[in-house]
Length: 62
Image (cartoon, rainbow, N blue to C red; front, side, top):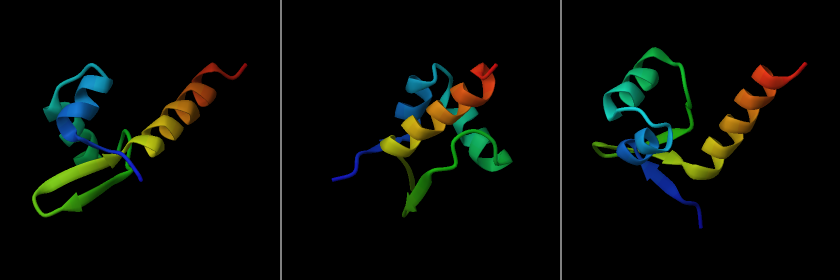
């Protein structure tokens, strides 16, 4: 079963505010692996792990 994180949990994971995570979603930057369930936005935890790995690979490749 997939695990989903709320906007607040994603903000805690990236040590930022929920408003920043909402801005990333609005601007199309940051992790784009989310779904909407009514008024709620949920992020796939496994997709966030993949996003992190891709970001690290792109920034740390020599």
